[in-house]
Image (spheres, rainbow, N blue to C red):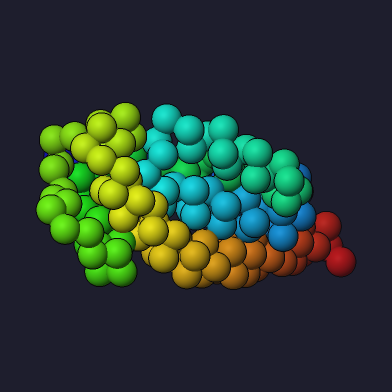
Length: 161
């Protein structure tokens, strides 16, 4: 178990450094992160990449971070994540007879159960996705700028200035 945890931490660190070292503006990278989080909150898993890359192109955001951050919804956390979307969406749109079934979470299966459940989960995704993406943008931008400042200071010290 410790080996898996160590590997997981190394993977997270590697991806963090890969994203933070991108040669793009902090705004572009953070906006890509935010768009990825927002689209990741929508129950459109087979189309997330196409949607987020289109949005990244339109908003001139970094496409690498946009695509990477859609993985906030993934096969490992999908039942819990989608249940959360269902609860929030159902609170706002109370359709009669709509129940959450964790065995049918693919977009095609959700629509086959009825448009109501898909609509409930989309509304839940938008409601949870907006504040999450705003928070991601501001934290991501701040994190990138802080890293770049620390790196610039480190390089200045090394050069002897």
